[in-house]
Length: 609
Ligand code: F6R
Image (cartoon, rainbow, N blue to C red):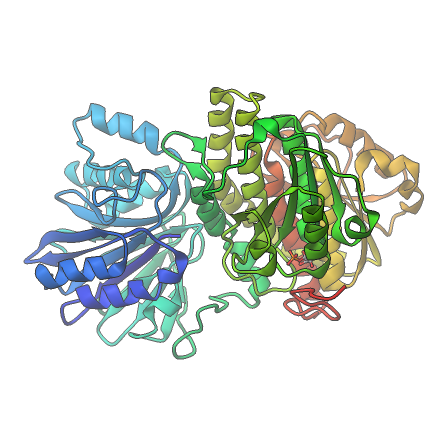
């Protein structure tokens, strides 16, 4: 994930910018850069590779400006190179960016037609030119940024530096985090408080949609509508820990909210944004065209990620595929493919005892072992032939959230690659699917906006004794995941069911006391799920519907609450619908006063049977 830094200082800032960038190195990067103002003129130094390359450049050609921005780039649009490295600049401004600007291609065409010249392949450079165009039309820098921000789609954080403006930096946030550090006559911007720890421990966080106008002695926050808002600064523990909670009460909340950003990281690992194609980050080759069967195994939430991915491996790649919980798989002695079998093991920790035992069994059956893990140095990773990292970053909350969605992005990318290799999807379909994946961070950012509604709903849910979750297609594993999340952190009994199974048993439970949470994007199965909702309503059940505008418009029965998700193509809806499902569990547990990050009886890494 890219890292962002900005400093309004009293002394030359370039080396401090690099120091702050070094504290963001953990996020991963492949080039870096810094821009300052020298006598009001923008000057940049950029280098491919590690920060020491940038430092060497700076020692040969120092920068003396008292104001600057810096960036570590994790390549998304365009390979790691100096022209693609940030800051991107025009004669009016320099900008650094973390995230994805989804609608950059249309802006680029429009700007090129007007004579704006591009030097890089990045999506970021359109932002530089869009704001420059507004300045050329006569707007002041602050107005120009205010005019452009509402036109950008996607999940992003930005920092701007303007030529001739020695006392102005602007930061903006829509998805990925951004913090303002308040010093003594100095002001800072950073991707997190940890980056700013050497300079200040007074930190104010931008809320989603906010932008901040920084001067050395003042900072003004504006919300998405442009209204001035207060974002109080708080003291952050000295040397803020590498994994801190940011401005969240719990790690789980932080991990739910950082999904647009970490999912972007996973996307950049598996996707070439410029050609809209998938690429595998591992050197070992797996010839999917020869694979006869895929056998998956995992535990808990990791298992449910696999259950979701089975739909993609079957429909996109037409690979015969089965999946079982690892504690059963390991003792079932299942016959596996005698030739060209792939066994896939999914695990956040990479240490789960049952999953590891299943891996060892599959290895003894001559399967190619592919593991999808968050910890690349884990035992499961080390014992695998091929490791697909999910790059979610450390997950501290015991209830898995971001590892679930990052696993899904990884699995979707592998399923697309398998489909291409097997000739079951065309290049055009691959591009279409990849473009749908690229939209995910932006859609997740929108989905997070349901939180206020979910907080209210949580008060009612906290009084329930039992909760039923229903879904079809990939919303079925999500129904199971919703029930698992709610059980493990609120201790309310919950069950997930395939909606079609309702009348084969669970319908007997429906009464006016039991909330039924229906996960139903408006896809090809929506009508079927709608019939199940009618069955629930006819028995006095309380329906909480998670759907999109179209689904809500077509729902004729009354619901206790309808949570509206952004409209999206159906294949990967589970990644976006996971967000309200996670938020429901989190807020219900919070209302009930439970220990959200460390629920009773549970461990983050289950290394025993
Ligand atoms: C649920 C949860 C667990 C884990 C399971 C597997 O929120 O966190 O169900 O998913 O224990 O753990 P890993 O993925 O580390 O193998």
